[in-house]
Structure formats: structure tokens, C-alpha cells
Image (tube, rainbow, N blue to C red; front, side, top):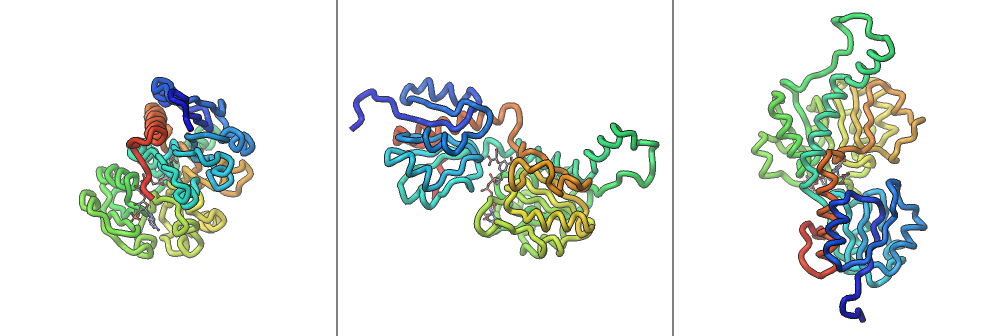
Length: 328
Ligand code: NDP
Ligand code: DGY
């Protein structure tokens, strides 16, 4: 039985932006312990820290499975992840135990769409390669045939998963003069009309697109979706972009497709594992641009995500509404 005024125990798995910490402190209802580091909490510390907690605020790097839930014990009421992706949470197990889940949709959509556009343009127009040539003396003169790449104007773009982020990317693509916007997913979307989006079977999207952008969530169905068969159907001139989760792609098959000229180039904001080892074959390829999962790394966005994660946590602790509760 909880005594009146007793503080609820919360574990936070990382140092997070102050916006969220301020909200939790001001609420005065929880006693916070935290893995006070910029680096991920070691598993043993996570299992120790969560013991007896009523609330857990975690990140996408923390695998929250039955072992963690067992370590937390029966008092755990709410898990609040500071991310929109929730593939790191064992949702079936969490649901079975009646634990509520908060996440951070919408607030990072613009930042992630913007970064995906930057990655697409950088990959297609070979910007990292160009920067490297300037630095290493490879820039000998203006040359008509040098560092050319495909443009968006008049192109066909295929978006896999026209959800919040996919749609925000589609909106940003329109002013570039894209001719056709194809998308695939489980269901056709009414909002696709705003961008003249055509709902097509995956095979059509893969074979007809000049640019493919992956923005679906990682699920058992999308895991390994972009594999040898997928890349073999793409145009040889096509560019592949992934800003969803690394596991949607079979990286060995992607390496093969890029190094054999099966596809033109790839830009990845997400990989498996993260970080990608510096010895990874993909990093030897000039036609592969890899970023360190920075989709939402825009100045104000992380603070807003942290504040939303804190509010979700408080709602779950107090048995009231959570601003963004995952329904599952
Ligand atoms: P949404 O839920 O709005 O969109 C997810 C989309 O995935 C939906 O359109 C859904 O389509 C689609 N999808 C689900 N299953 C399949 C499937 N089997 N085949 C094709 N499409 C499918 O989420 P958000 O747009 O907000 O975020 C999407 C993902 O982006 C997150 O889950 C996260 O993994 C990633 N992300 C990455 C970031 C980064 O830093 N790189 C930042 C933020 C998010 P349908 O409804 O038809 O099923
Ligand atoms: C998410 O929120 O799922 C991203 O991958 C990081 O912001």
C-alpha cells in the first residue's frame, strides 16, 4: 500500500534534454534515478536500475523485454520511450502485463523528413564524394563528365510506408518537380491525394521508381524486406534511401547490389548494428552514404521529444491521460 505523499520510483536510462527533466521535477510526484551518461545503459545497470520502478523512461537503444519487465517487478505501470519507433519494446509481453506505453510521434516528423531529404540529395548528387575530392586534391578542373548523379525533377519516387514521416517527405518532394509519387503499405491512405500519391503493389514501386525511400516501421513483416530479390527488381540507375530502421534492409544484399552496379547508390540513416563497425564493407563504397541515425537530431526537436516523454510518463504514473499513448 502506498503511503500518502510517497514518491513513485522512476528509472531513466540516459541523460536526456533538460526540458523533460524539468517537467518531472516540477510535478513532484516521482523519485528519479537515472543512468547519468550520454552512452547507453549497460544491461546489468538497466536490470538493476529498473528494480521496483513504477515508471521507466527509455530510449530506442534499450531492449525492453520480459527480462527487464521481470526485473522491474509488478509495480511497473508505464514505459515511456523517447522515440516514435517502438520495435525495441516487447509489446505483446508489455500488453499482457497491463503496462501502458508512451511514445513520441509527430514532434519529430519535420526533422526526420528534412534529414531524409538531405540524405537523398546528398546521395543522388554525390555530395560526400565531392567534398572528399576537394580535400584530397582530386578536383583538377571543372569536368563535363565528373561527379554527375540523378536529379529529382521529372523522376518517379516510391515511398515505402506513407505514414507521418513518409507523407512529410512526399510534401517536401513535390516542389522538386517529381513526376510520379508511388507508395506502398498495408492500406491506401486518404492523405495521399494531397501529393497525388498512387497506391501500388510493392513490386511496381520497386521496379518503376528512380528513388526509393523507406519510412515504414520495423515489424516482423518489414524485417529484411529490402533483400536480394528487392534490389534485383530496382532500376540500375535508382537510388535507395532508408531512414526507418536498419533491420528493414538485408545489408549483405545491399552491399552486393551497390558493388555490382545493380543499383546506383544508397543513403542510410539507420543500420544494423548501430554503430556500424568502421570495418563494415558498406563503408568502403563511394556510392553508399551512411549517417549515424540523426533523423530527429534538430536543435529543438530532441527537447520537445524529451518533454513529451516526460508528460507521457507522468500520465501513466498518475493513471491519467497520456499525450501520446500507444494503442496496442
Ligand atoms: P507511422 O506509423 O506514421 O508510419 C509507419 C508506416 O509504416 C505506415 O504508413 C505503415 O503503413 C507502414 N508500414 C507498416 N507495415 C508495413 C508493411 N508491412 N509494408 C509497408 N509499409 C508498412 O510512423 P512514422 O512515420 O512516425 O515513423 C516511421 C518510422 O520511422 C518509425 O517507426 C521509426 O522506425 C522511423 N524513424 C526513424 C527516425 C530516424 O532518426 N531515422 C526518426 C523517426 C522515426 P500502413 O499504415 O499501410 O501499414
Ligand atoms: C525514433 O524516434 O524512432 C527515431 O529513430 C529517433 O528519433
